[in-house]
Length: 322
Image (tube, rainbow, N blue to C red):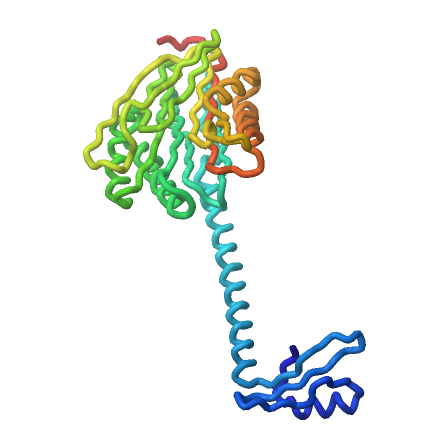
């Protein structure tokens, strides 16, 4: 269809130029004016004026153009949100002799609710944190940013008192989120002087501690989720991290990665991947395990996948005693 302001003038002009009109000017009772013609290949076209019907067509065209522009703006804003969230993940990590560690997050959408972080509690102590926010998409990403901001700001005052830190974070998250919003969190604190690993598992999946002798320990929940209850008490557990031990903190997106047959990657898949690549540096080890989980699940990733790997590598420096 061709639209013009003066159908009659255009009809007579094209008629003189030899255009073959198969339908002369028509003025139907419902208004408007139109005619029909063919091009040299026999294709049929309508020449119509800006009557009410064509104005409706033009309005629909404008509405479609506005929808495309709104979609473009939304995609642009989502890309900005993705970049902002990427910057919330640690851009550097505190240097701690005796510990080689790294984190990886592969999101299922442009933005997500998985979270990991590295917090320097003192010169000799670092915290490794992995969290999983309830829900998905923008809402989860906003709550994740809230959690990250609280942990990073409040750890400056709490120091190595992780129970006080997490109690305070829970209170803030409870006050600043919707009733059904919460986060599972694993907080692991390693002190190089004592070689002790203190941890709080706040309703999160058990961390895996792969000992140098091949034994596996699961670090189960010590308290419930963050942000859901106003009355909340952090419970800290403790173990040692010996030379050659490997610690894996992860979200359920790793173990619940599903293949086409409906099988889970599972805890066994995670442990086997760690064992196969145990000699690799922490960063390479983490990336390899994530690649295995993503490859296992095939083309469709259902959930965010996040993993921190920490390896106790070097013996105690000279002059440092427990």
